[in-house]
Length: 256
Image 1 (cartoon, rainbow, N blue to C red):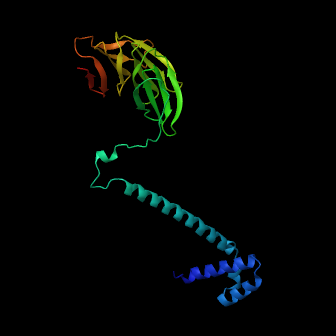
Image 2 (cartoon, one colour; image 1 turned 30 degrees about the vertical axis):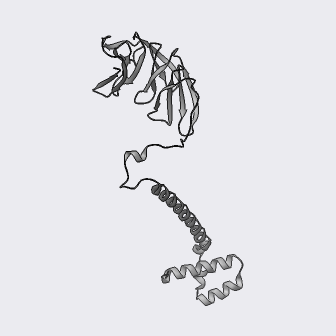
Image 3 (cartoon, rainbow, N blue to C red; image 1 turned 120 degrees about the vertical axis):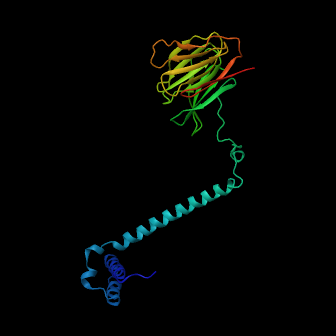
């Protein structure tokens, strides 16, 4: 690397300052004479400590370069370990063992697992009548929500994640404050197991499906005593098992 005349003068002045400040007077005198450093520049305060600053800057940059090289190496390994563009398909990205965490705590089969729409937690429902909250980043158990007296069949968050709805074989639907983790409302109306609940994405509405072959729509978040706004009534059709809801369509799933 070739330095310009200006950079050479600055480097010489910085070296001269370093030699003088470090007590290498004889070396300083020889260097000033041989490098032809003017006395006014050699004593200029703007060069005080300049060489040390440049040196420490170089060390910091070297460390950053090493860190970046390490990250690039890791990224290349991850990329090479995955499928190529030609091989890439949905089958290549199916999760494979070993699992990241194995979470245990329920005493009976787990009926539903959902992720919080905002925070790094997930919620599980079980036939043991409990709802459990987990931190999926650390794999830690957070808390248990108790209130249902029979199997919890489904759970759902409203869009902000502040309210959790659950439904159970005890014929009730419960709303949980997911900030204070308390049951704030219990809704009755179905005559058989409540199999599914979903919040409507827009508005203060909850939809429930039951094995009594009915679908009910509830205005729940603002009402002090929620009642169904729409009741399809129990028909002679199949048992309703699962709901899929968007802002304008409702799709129930039934058993044959």
